[in-house]
Length: 196
Picture 1 (cartoon, helix red, strand yellow):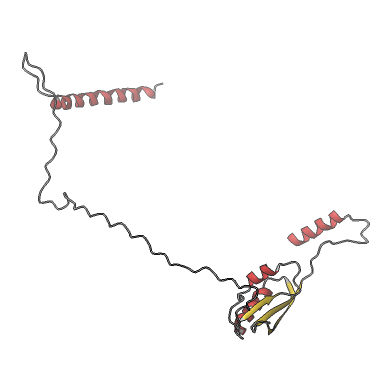
Picture 2: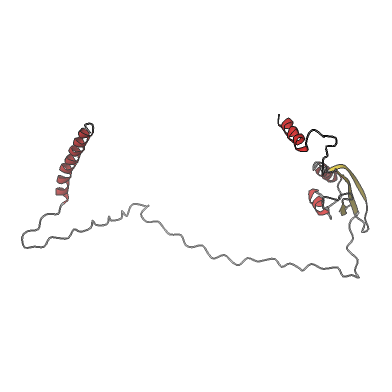
């Protein structure tokens, strides 16, 4: 308690000095007393400052609103023409890819493999692009062997075949002959050997 006493005296002294300083300021801001018999005048708000006519920043010209955009002109498209059963399909050029096939693919769907290659049906037959397609398929690590074949198609184009041999999948591992050790102990030992 002794240590708080000087603080409380100091804080009282500071408050007292603050009040002494505030009294003269309040007297300066007080409106003059009205003579006897008259009502005191209401304080009037300060007058708004007059704009300086020489200041270019006081009056900012307003830009005219932009004109409304005209309705966009949409191109008119023709409906696609469907081939009637009696009509022949359009001829395909001799160096156009007529089809892409993936014989040997069982687990991976044909559409997924077509999405992995860069060449598409209707593109120009290009050896460099087909080499890039071959490498894209090989880098998936799904196939043990890939052979690229091409032959003339029925409509005069080229049919490209990627003959694939899928990698075998390990479905189960059996530990035959282990009588004194259980399968779970073997798997735990393999897991610890791999992490170490």
